[in-house]
Length: 186
Image 1: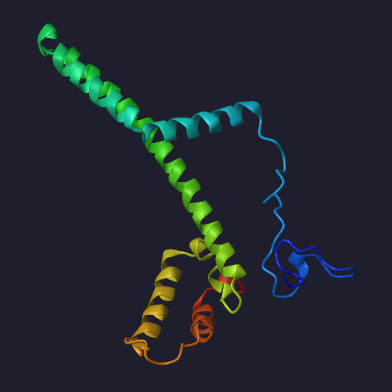
Image 2 (image 1 turned 90 degrees about the vertical axis):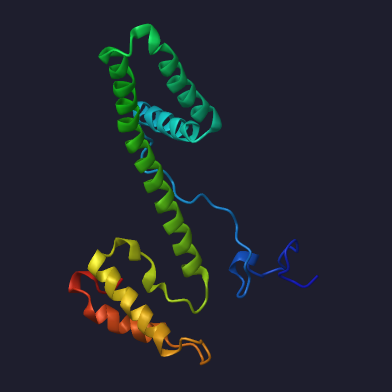
């Protein structure tokens, strides 16, 4: 094994593997220290929301929902298919739908943010990659449309991708120049 290889301790006066040039070994550190611990009520609600969102996508949740509908259908003749009988299913499904919209949106927001953070980490860790796209999710629709047009222009210059890579930095410099002053310098 060569010095600096995984599993080999650094020699005297040699920096740890995570600090040596060309080394990809990293020590595990917490991503971020919590600024303030969430209150017990907020923490409990967050755990409840996460648990319900996980359960709502399960087979048992589907079976329970389907069973409730079958039970409601079976009880129809006993209640003479009355308006109250119909009101039960309408009210129940409306309440469940209303609450699930917020749970689904919360889950999607959390997942989208995590994916963006992971993509930002990948872009930031690749040598030679443009880090100007980190945070692109915060741009307005018009700004994203301008960026998309620039990328299409790049692709149209070489649709068969037979030439050497086109400088994305030059294209992004042109795009950044088109952005409002508040958005420049990202």
